[in-house]
Length: 424
Image (cartoon, rainbow, N blue to C red):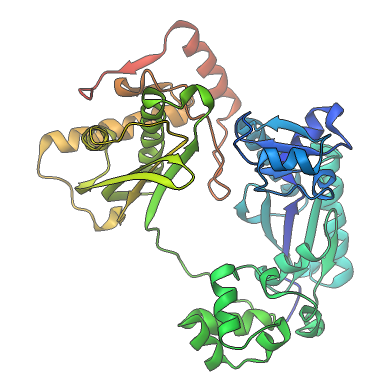
């Protein structure tokens, strides 16, 4: 058993990017918010703010009470995506990125000559130096090295910020005993309560359980995998099955009316449909949600024949929207549910349906090549500026290459293409 995996976790990522780009924010408490409104919450905070009790998810009004000098900054997702790709390039200059786990986390596999503690430590320090040199001194990272990915992530979390921790095979499992159960990735609130129900109150107790006991708690083979992970074994990745794709958006004050909410929902539906196609899925149900207060939601759904094109989804949305209640909306969302993988879908027998799917895919290809909204359906014309980019931590947009970006600028000088559809 060897040190095979290095896990790199950028510290306070969104806030650190802002501090790197804006020198006046360095060394002061920073809270990053999706929109500049007192009713929203912090989606990221700097370590200076965390030391004052302001954490991710803290409402802005509460954050100001805890830390009066807090600097509130509106999120800039395109900047975070651009910086993410710079980070990948810096890491790749040192060792290969095996998997992008999220916008601020990557996993790397160590080569045979890099797996002893001294060599792994040297490689980790090389990565830190490359990030400082290529991305800036504010963008620090915590690095964990271990015999598998789960333990490498645990190791990285043990030394924050800007830490470096190795969990060697000889350290297992006793080095984990000082951790709390929620410190282990994958043990959220539900699993934590399930473990407590079975009498497991510490990581030490968890490590002492047999394979059969863990399978009973996890209600399946995942429990057996945990037995091996906690002992440093590497296991093959298990493919996951996606059940839904969706987007939600907290409405800024200027969109908190019926017209604004509908515009944002249209934009979100177009984004969700394009994302579904990019992942090779079809949907059987459209689900629409609108929040009118923290405890009052309007939810509606429509079952569909297997569908992948945006026009059909827009028609279904228009029918659902006719029944929405009056009120002042604060948050909206769309979800495409009951997904079916492309490999299980036969081509439609109807020419019109095939044309709609082909049109949607052509639009996707053009937008991937020339930039978002280079081409869009006419139904989105009045809403294309709504719902700006929000980053899904596990779905980071790609950057077009420089030649494509230049072509995009030339195209936008003389026209923006609008494909007219029949959706009202």
